[in-house]
Amino acid sequence: MAELAGGRNIFEDMPQANVQTDWEEVKKRNPDVFCVAWVGVETKRANPKVILKRPGVEEITAIQNDELYILEEFLFCRPSPRLLQGLTKLAAILHPDIYPKYKHIDPLI
Image 1 (cartoon, rainbow, N blue to C red):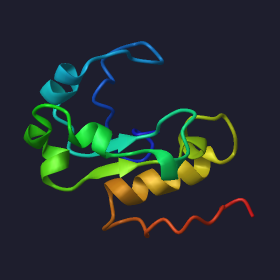
Image 2: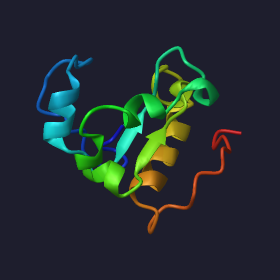
Image 3: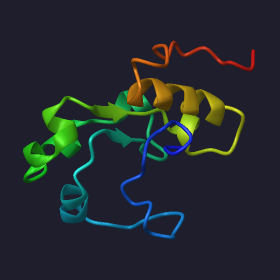
């Protein structure tokens, strides 16, 4: 989805569908935008402080530029037509100068 939205997954060099990594590797890869979708956790219950309290978090470009986003799991992690909504939202996050702000409207309705 990141590539379709005009972005790049910092773990695109790893062939696995699900990458298991650690915090030091995330810091080393230094994302410009930090998007998180917690599987099985409602967005309103996801707490960004879990990320912001990690050691060295202030070294990450995305955090320095206030580019940490908690995403709706159902728009990104479940195979359904709602993936199109997730793609729309991600494109707006990555390229706000090109794509309109995401308004939580289902493009299929």
